[in-house]
Length: 338
Image 1: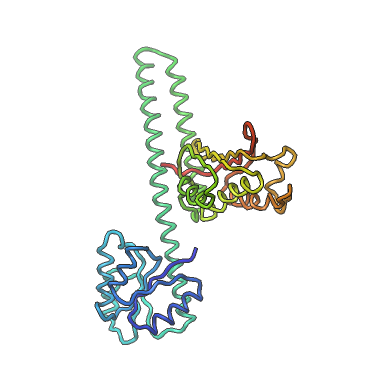
Image 2: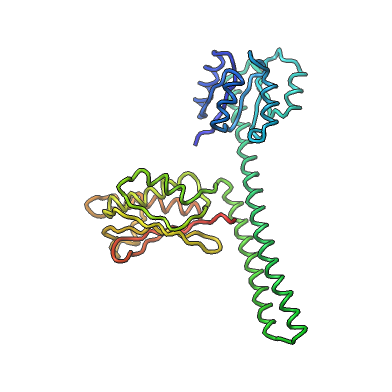
């Protein structure tokens, strides 16, 4: 997905030249000629970066910056001010004091402009990753405190009963709760390791992804029995779409039941169709690259993509028979703790 930059500049020449340079560098560019257009755009979308000319017709770029930093919904936007060599050092200092994240001084060569924007964007991605990590670890620590506190409360009560009534069965309860606490700590440690290794993954609502994919198959009857959030990236849409597409094109299905269940760490997402099913002798082959089967052919290419993506997520995918007919494709994906 392309990063988005909102350029606020009242000079048409600057709009055209900067827009072309940044688009050629792989960015999506939005244009606003004044503060009114800028805030109108910000009501509809939140860009990754704002480039604001410090000198505008309707109001100063510094005034726009001040408004952004005082707005609860916009205050965290990354803002780079565009100045000229004629801009005073006082103006530049004022911009930094009001919260500008950086400056670009015109005139500037194309190569330097792209290099600076790329550097800013890398910094933005780092900040986003840190913020996501902080939020995830806050949730993980909250869960850890809650579960350990519950176990300690039970242990405290069990100790009291053992001491006052000499109930030796309480020793078994204490042992069980200690083991549960150790398991909880081990799971959280493993979860932390996973998050550190996959900072690029976002949180996706399973039902939301399913709804966005299945809207492309109006003739398909779909039922979803639960909900939850998983760690994934934009490829999760392709994963779900490939499973559904294969069920329709190659399994001749017109109905899919999606069953969502969870354990401590994973969601098990089952796609059960009412199609022709998958023969036992090819169940182990359908996830191989370039596998061919049946008159439709290429039945495995989509599922190969599914498996490769699940491998990247440190998840699993496998197939079972549906009853009375059809196939069940099962995804095992990391759950978002809440």
